[in-house]
Length: 237
Ligand SMILES: CCCCCCCCCC(=O)SCCNC(=O)CCNC(=O)[C@H](O)C(C)(C)COP(=O)(O)OP(=O)(O)OC[C@H]1O[C@@H](n2cnc3c(N)ncnc32)[C@H](O)[C@@H]1OP(=O)(O)O
Image (cartoon, rainbow, N blue to C red; front, side, top):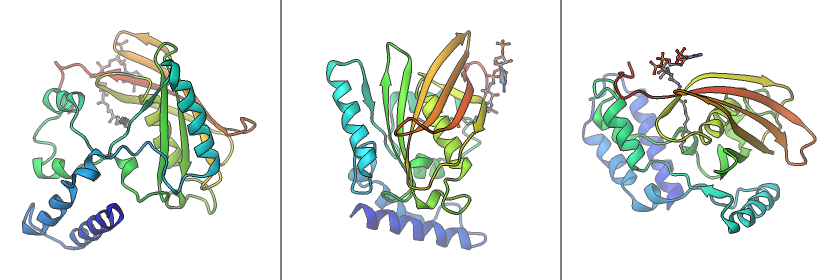
């Protein structure tokens, strides 16, 4: 059911993309809206195992779920789109309504969760609040290819951004992301992204992470990021 919903949306969007001068929001978008309002799709937590997860990913997932039992770690749920207080606050205080049409916004979903199971970003993030760090288990699927057989650097950068962002709280935006790609990541392999908050200075959060193979022998990437807590007094444009 979920698969057919996603496929349906893809074809609707593809159709709209090909048509020049399509009306801003017309009847032809209504089916998409109906599909999107499917409760299952909106409320499904995507940071849970599905049949596309490799043995490595499932094994690591189980290990971290065990660590969650004493409360020191927590698994962060992940939704395609869900209206949380945080996202509502963001829209209220920081999003200029002139920037995005309300209709478009109602179609929005998290970029990394827009692929069918196993084809794109499969990941789960675990957070240790006391230690201000997270561990992201990531399996990049075949649609994330760059150089043949290897994960696209932009896909890795996306996951690094998300992993670093998971160490922050509240309304923040990435101001700077600096990545050293040290070894190419084989497509469909599992990598572990260890992220931490290094320093908090006023509105500035300095973070860093490394990306390693499951056996920890290969260091694929290292990155630092600067995230800025948004100032409600300032516009985002
Ligand atoms: C569970 C779901 C998780 C989803 C996670 C998704 C993660 C995705 C995150 C993103 O991709 S965000 C999108 C990419 N980022 C952007 O589009 C941000 C564009 N930039 C901005 O909007 C503004 O530049 C920004 C909000 C980041 C900062 O603007 P402000 O006007 O609020 O800050 P301001 O310019 O006053 O700077 C505040 C401090 O930060 C410093 N700063 C700002 N930008 C900097 C920069 N780029 N490099 C170094 N320092 C910087 C600045 O010097 C200053 O330092 P001091 O307080 O010490 O004076």
